Length: 569
Image 1 (cartoon, helix red, strand yellow):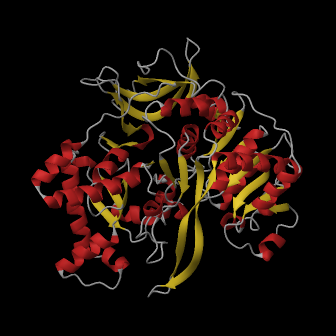
Image 2 (tube, one colour):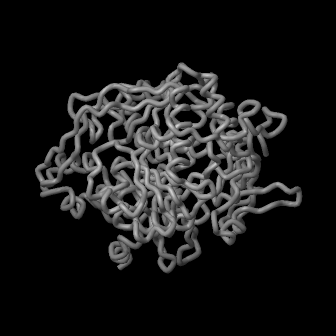
Image 3 (cartoon, one colour):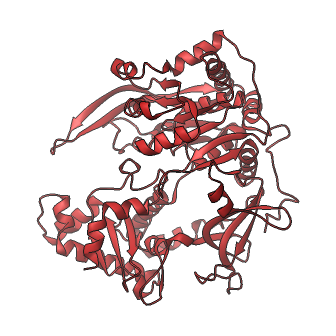
């Protein structure tokens, strides 16, 4: 199946924009003086100590300061020249190890102008994953922010190919850190730009088939894998996404806060650059006036930037939805009815750069012959399909396959169904299905999605042991909701950890989960028979969820092995 609005698959947003480098250069000429990349000025920061002794950083942030499209392009050109002049070899790779920020895009575009492949690494990755990613791709230049720079001395002796480090001075860099890296060439980001200003290097532009990025996964199962994405893959995706966002242009403002090391954010920002949109950088910790890192009296990113659009991952959208629906429900039936009919739009149409088909998965009970809608594994072909996994031929051959017509297909592992209008809905995940002792199949992801609607769930992992007849769950409750219940119920407790061990609290949460399960029409064997409440949130920094907030099941099972075993005793 493909998008019928187009006579054939589209490849480029406009003629000549066949690579990321060409697209950015053409956009800079098209939108020369319009706002391009914006960063809030840091006025001051301070640490506030909580009653339990923990310290929390609070930021006083000012207005956004902007580079125009022309200025951003000039910075990328200078950075490209500076890279070469500082000694980066043209046949080696550069890596970006930083939170999402304007310099990330400047650095990437600078690399593209010299046809350098960019290795992208999540800022939340641990030491082993960082070392693996850099060594496997033989990176010679690492571009990082000051926070990530502090991690390098501990692992620098294990990095076999690294020669240069470029650090972004977003906060003061300690001399001791640089001293421990004196066996490497270290320069600030600004210094590299200045070097490029005075020592121009001719551009060495890529072709559409060249690898633009090797994007490492967040490692939800073992060490991360690098996915090779060509310039052609990226611009085809950009061209396709622009067709589904109407009237995107220079009057729009985009809030960037998700990890640029994930293709979702990189593609989104590239779409904005192709459309002349102003991109303002923020973070999840400074987004609203009430965000954790915002100093009292300081406005959050959204209030200052006033974005017209942003993207999100399902976990964050679930929280926004739950908060909105809760307020709507409090208003009564008429308001809820008006809210339900206010805006309805079908989502899930195939992007015009690719084909989509379903393949029956007999073991899981999903077949293309199913009624009323065909169901099966989602398989994608077309111009957006990547080259494969770096240095991992076995994994590449497992999920990338060529059919008799010569079309290359990527087997996603997602289970989907086709609606009558051609939209695709993701309903399951192959590797999240477990067979219980008596032969029933439990879709862990489906159950988790249903239980997320409970007011007592901030995060949840459902676990099923194939040698037992029931499943269990680890639940991270939102502290405020659980504490409010305890207060109303006259439950006394010392702290949130003690409350999570309270039998009445566990019973209250389990009853709420049962209600959510029944509302979603789950089978009895799908409803967790036992649960444990955990006080600490799961964050990318903890290594228990990915940067996109997806569960890292193996890490969660390892960390809470004893708790899970107790639930089956």
